[in-house]
Length: 318
Image (cartoon, rainbow, N blue to C red; front, side, top):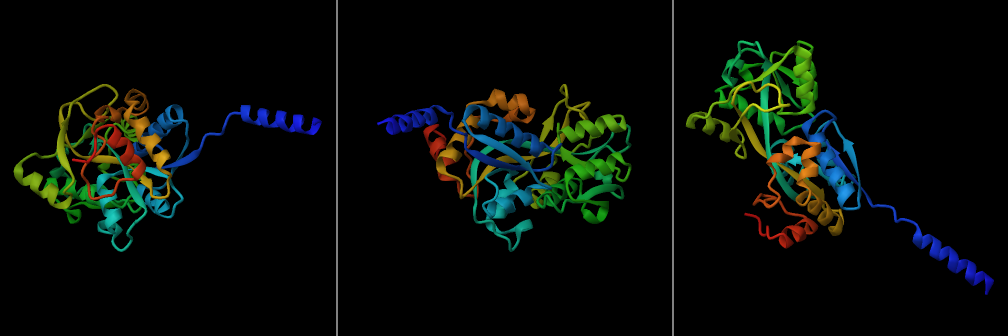
């Protein structure tokens, strides 16, 4: 009898112990990038509001994280719409490397990018980059070659019109610019690295893009998912002394096919119901509409994500 009492007491004690939160990974681009900040914001929301333990795992670039997800080694990642479509189709920068195990979780918000120069530079528009040293390549962030190519096309330029400064990712591009190796560099607006570069060189200015029908047609020919939008000056956003047109495309959250349905459900729910917390971590989430996390895209949604979106009245995607 004594043995059973002791065993019962041990069982009750173990039941009283807190259950360890399930650990999942969030693959991102390098620290200092907007992609890292986005992933960290979602990880915080899912950890604090969904009872998960989400660990941020930075990689050299999104394409590395996507490859890890395809192998079942990465659970979630924040990537642009272009990358999702190309990865699942095995097209573009993923030619011959179809990533069958990647699934959509949610469309987040319009992601804005720009090409930056020093604030006192004589360069005013993207067209002025002709013959100038411009960061290029992005071997660890493969879709960005198309993104930057679309921006050059907006100004009537191609890779052959610039002096390419080859870099593996956007942060290295900013660092080479700071070091004086490039006249212009590409990065996301409001990213920590842009703030760093602004302070390091005495001020930045974003190059103006064109919005004529001809320029927009050239842009979309290179990058159909892109569009041009105007950003106005605002506090804590360097390089925009006046309203400036930049390139935009949608950023998304993707999830591995291997991830359990309830985990995908909880993460999407945490995003939809905690916008203020996300914004406090990364200001880009101000543009997110929690009621529009589903979008018709050439990619399959994860069943767990689809379940939440259906409950929230956002299904089917439009």
